[in-house]
Length: 171
Image 1 (cartoon, rainbow, N blue to C red):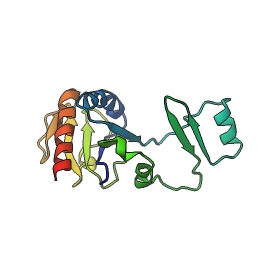
Image 2 (image 1 turned 90 degrees about the horizontal axis):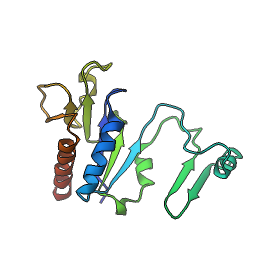
Image 3 (image 1 turned 60 degrees about the vertical axis):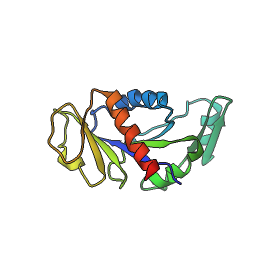
Image 4 (image 1 turned 30 degrees about the horizontal axis):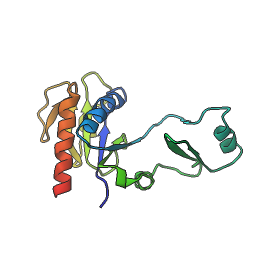
């Protein structure tokens, strides 16, 4: 059985990362181990210039794994890839240690999602709503056909996720 995926999507500046920083420890306190896949549109480098792993990657290694007793990380160069393949990224995770994988971004993917929407943020909510949306977290009262959660109450959002996850495991 595959680990359930749940995306947290919204326009830039909505607070996706901030909310996840608050929700993940609450899920952890409920003994729900969450993995995370974050999409970014920015140039990124998780390596530190000047470190051995950086130098070896820049020397041409297409994959570099850095490992210690506390953690390990795999960096893969993908210059020929046109787009990011979420299912491929998910396949790189150890599902045996997870109950759920939270996905930040990837709003076009056909996976269950919670939409974040705040008043004053560029972009309308209608553009984010599709048949995969299981809830909306907002600072506004909205009349929608899905539950509307208070974006400023990470505890209630974590409870919603925990309840949703229970239903996935039963069903």
